[in-house]
Amino acid sequence: MGGALTVARRELASYFATPVAYVFIVIFLVMSGALTFTVGGFFARGTADLQPFFAFVPWLFLFLVPAITMRLWAEERRLGTIELLLTLPIPQWAAVLGKFLAAWAFCAIALALTFPLVITVNLLGNPDNGVIATGYLGCLMVAGAYLAIGAAISALTKNQVIAFVLAVAVCFLFAAAGSPVVIEFLSRNTPVLAEIARGLSVTDRLAGFSRGVIGLRDVIFFASFIGVWLFANAVAIDLRKAD
Image (cartoon, rainbow, N blue to C red; front, side, top):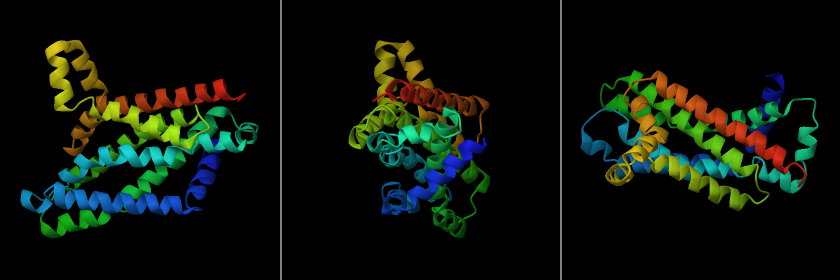
């Protein structure tokens, strides 16, 4: 793990060496606050919780997370520095895991900076902070799932724009798979596909966390989901190493 953590520290520092990190965080904070208090009807609900925030986070991450991952490997391949990275005295899996952990830590920082929402809801009422904590954990799991997808796609191309668009498209499939419209359509035509879609939906998995329930099946799902996509990331690097 030493090599992975070394890569993670390097990558995390590189995020804050450019304005991109700060732009991402500002956009995320502004949009999460605006959607929670306006579209989410925070005050009109009359309930001291952060359910509106948790409902919008997967859709915010749908665009913002691919913006983080699009450069993870695509930039390394475009600049030709991927060979240097892979010749370091660390296994390839450590480089893959390190880059992923750095991006995940960055998302955790962005989520932590939404603490004013927690303070606000505690000032206005008496919320169950345990439920809020599990909701944040679920959001972090969703971020990890999207990051793993985006990293794998970034390893397939040198073009960051292509990596971004493809990552948004694939993440959207897993976000929308559990939506009522999709499930209802599939249930009428192919019930088996409806069950598969519901099982692969990251938004459905987040719902349990946002209710304060940390289900073992949900934890296993996210761990497996992230693991599969990180494995795909490593395979993609091997396939495109010679490019």
